[in-house]
Image (cartoon, rainbow, N blue to C red; front, top):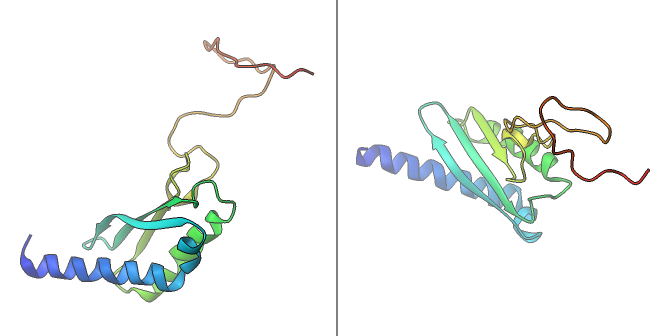
Length: 124
């Protein structure tokens, strides 16, 4: 990577980090963290990882949506924002837990083909 390319990427990373600190101070104030886990300047894509108290926080999906909508407006080089809390969610905060894991919910009494591990049964 050339020095110019490296400097431009470092500048973009710094602007993204400052954007997160300036627009979302509540993340850090509430014990959470936000970090850039991947940045592709050529495609304009950035992956943000929310951690700490953000993992499992009930309002993290709203925070993710706000980050996604504001960042593309404020930082012209960014076209797509992916964000994840790391709590079994798929990219973009899919809190349905189906983000590529291949698992689906099961319910007591429901039969599954070839799967003998039904887990604990409800007492009713």
